[in-house]
Length: 217
Image (cartoon, rainbow, N blue to C red; front, side, top):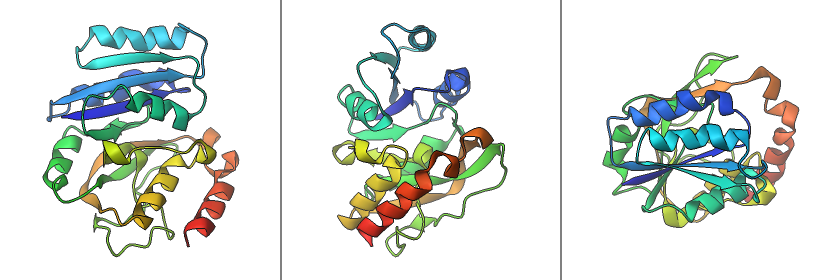
């Protein structure tokens, strides 16, 4: 079985879209943990998310009102996971119905499994990421794993708050250097929403990436 983590700080308006695409997965053996962080105790955002517990017994909502930052939220959510494989989905992204099913065949031979994806929202198209076995891919050239596509062994899932904003890329680089095995399913299984107002460079995260790559060259 698989534990799916859905952290929410901003973007509660997209929750129905993302949660619905988890519920409609062809693969049914999962739990979904929704974590609301960075808001006051029992905030309106938490109350909206809490309603999803009544829609499906596999959904659990955590009020992480003492937690700040995405990495800290994810690390806290991991403590509530029952299963040995972890998948992530951002609240503004969506999965296609066979997303998890497409990754299952690779679980015996790989530590981290992603999929191809398609952009929607303020941008269309697909990212230029390597597909298949990533053994020969140099991870400092491009972030090869779409965050909302990843399936990762629980024992490897730990994020560093120093790299919030690029915490996923930091984790992949760290695990790549440790010799972990990566694979990207060739088919598009994730829809990644692009927001013009929250563009990557506008947040200054490109500067973090430059610093991060220098560390792992």
